[in-house]
Length: 390
Image (cartoon, rainbow, N blue to C red; front, side, top):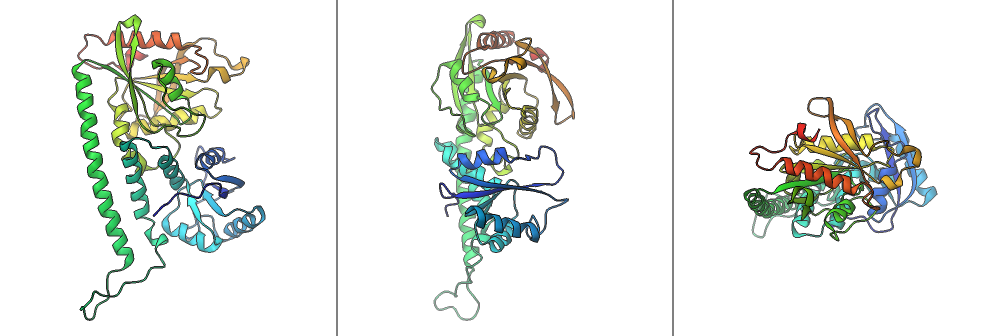
């Protein structure tokens, strides 16, 4: 089954404020995600609730409002900023008489469009199958029980939904086995780097922070970069020569993070995200021009903790310096910045450098910092400590 929404579909964006932090009152990020997936947002609606309605998520009255709005603006699909349960999704579709999807499916669609490598496609397929396995109650509710096999008397046959579940379960198992082989290959590559005493650096950060543009600027590569969410999913690794340290380091560009990144995707991209967990240093790239950069930093820190990379030393790289107004320019190109540690729930002081990957401003300073950090690791048995970065 193809879960991808049709291109150029007119959609209504719906957000429900449950009083939780980081609620997007203007649904800007959901709108960008929709456009990235080829959808056209034509209207937006937000509402407040103490808790989700068990049947319709937003309640009967609000569902009727959404239905009326869809008729007025010519929308053919409704998109929720939060994850819906299979039952809520099914009930909403019956009430609204149109397709209803959620943020999780939207991100899966974008990942499916962006994946280029064999590994990336396998990871997306696994996440898609895991999502689909929970939606069979909605997608296949019209199917009735099959008749028994030829020559069989009495009892009813196997339900079509049971056949579908079994087929998806087998597909999940095969995909996991293929990803396990990929993971072994990556582990072999990492062991080879370790034997060469290679210092590894991974670029991490919120999606569209400019990681790939920075990667290209540092290693003079031509990895695909665009001003859109999840422009690249596949990990790219190149050697970066640092003249002041008289050595080369391994630099990897990884998939971007986002608020409420589906757990299925985190699990599926374990092999790719392992690059960050095994790195000697993380370059945490931040879009310094984004007014919500603090919330984005917090989301990245949470994902890093979840994948076991919370303890890896970090250097904050505040990118897009060229997009800042003169009044917001930093007094110093390098300083210290406090971020919250999700594990200890206490502030953690990290070194920060301001750059513009687009114009090249600040890149010589960043290279010098990397040379100092890589040089300090020579001859040491233990990996670089967070204190060395600070």
